[in-house]
Image (cartoon, rainbow, N blue to C red):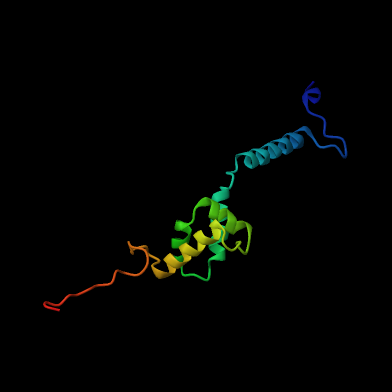
Length: 124
């Protein structure tokens, strides 16, 4: 009677039940990992690409430029190697570069050159 309860060995060329169960479990695990993987943030990916393009600037200048750019300008910079002259994106980028190269830490509170100092002399 014992020989009837024992499982028969798999036929040649056919995987056994245990092999099929393991294979299905592995496929399920792979599918689960693929579904739960965090999706990359498009804005962060765009920022990473722009950081690579700004390598010619110092780290402080690059960070300053990226802080000053809005999303639309960042998208425009990410899509093309040359912005159209006179476009809003080109102006915003140029303004950011000038400001950040002049003062990468952002400590300047006034735009442009400092106000001229005048002195007056008594009686003159």
